[in-house]
Length: 357
Image (cartoon, rainbow, N blue to C red; front, side, top):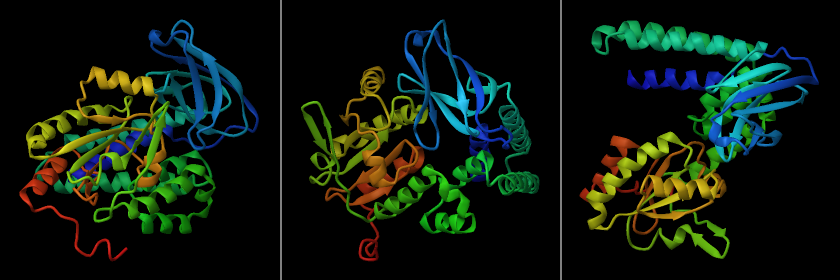
């Protein structure tokens, strides 16, 4: 039942973006975002979550970023300062106050807060149930309540940002066939650019699943050029960590990677970090701060994530000595188990996996 609990928590995070559509076209907005004082003098950006386009930019003054402009229709927006992702909001007409990753003051954002509150109540109910067989029935009832709520919101809002945000949460865990099936059932979702990229990612993830050889890429920074093939497919197993400095789970997972390297480095295991979706100076600062001892490919941005169909980080891939993918998308105990299995001689790519593709 732990898996279901995780599902509840993940939906609570995604629903922070959700609301129903009520803003009139070409509405004026004012966003006042409270941010850490350390960002004073830096440029803050509002970025369209779907397209990645910069909607607005201002200079941070006295711990605040104040935006103003017009928006044709409600959109999901992300606040970014110096490459740091400080949270998401629904950009709509009206006066929006944004603090501690929460937007208030306008109809869609307030509706969004109600949705978050309801999901948090479900989470609390779930956590209050005994985590043993005596609580199975109660947890199933909570899951049923959760599923009914999510389905009703999703189906009622396919033409606006609620349906879009709920779909994204489902889509990130779908395989290619499931994603195609969902898009065939709800073709309006194909209008979003991020959905098109998700479809491409699902296709590329299938091409780089366990049993396939690595796909090479080259990143150039100033006069330095680095390729994945400089490290992978050269006779040693390599654990490749796709990460970013702003990603909390990425930083937490480095402790696991350090412990794995300490245990198996003497047996030939190598580790490579690939910094994606990040500013180079932030990456370098994080490497020094967290004392990451392995080689790094810096400023890779979306090049490797597009090729490997990576939609969330950290993404960790274990490549065999010949560059065959032996494990991917594992963390913590599962990652440790796969690395141990490799060195025990019990982890290998399925014999027919490559031929079948």
